[in-house]
Image (cartoon, rainbow over the protein chains, first blue to last red):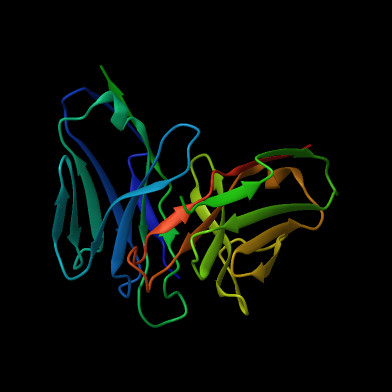
Amino acid sequence: GENVEQHPSTLSVQEGDSAVIKCTYSDSASNYFPWYKQELGKRPQLIIDIRSNVGEKKDQRIAVTLNKTAKHFSLHITETQPEDSAVYFCAATPTAGGTSYGKLTFGQGTILTVHP
Amino acid sequence: DADVTQTPRNRITKTGKRIMLECSQTKGHDRMYWYRQDPGLGLRLIYYSFDVKDINKGEISDGYSVSRQAQAKFSLSLESAIPNQTALYFCATSDPGGTSLDEQFFGPGTRLTVL
């Protein structure tokens, strides 16, 4: 089955700095890579995702890059703000065919703290 | 707004007790999932169901069972709770054929403590 490794486990930055979280995956059949944000005491919510037919996707201050050859993908947050403080999870899954179709495998999570 | 709800939100129980966690959704999604969250381990899939007649084990199904009573309801049972099942449990739904594609929508979570 799929295995997703996420680093770092904790990340502390100053407001305005950039933050980068990296994930590697093992199953070459994976082709959908979402990122979820979980604020303290809240439920995880999707913030951005990328499919294997593109190498980069951007939405305002957040972006995700994908390197299928190396089997890794990263979340980039620019101009960080205190409200970006949360736990971030990466995930991977194939979206067509196979027994793992549509079943997300999550990374271990990164606790991001943005200091004012 | 269409939502995913979980009951109870908090539960304290004793070792050996049977407990059921319930999930309901008004999103009209066919797919439902149960995860547990532990610090440093992320979200791990316990069971998932792609429709009412489809139940599948996830990566950590031992000690758990599920029931899909209807499209909108998916229950998780611990037949004989043990302390290492203390965790935060999330239900989620998805609808790959709809406008949200592969996004999973999570419930608010149930914090379970087994003494």
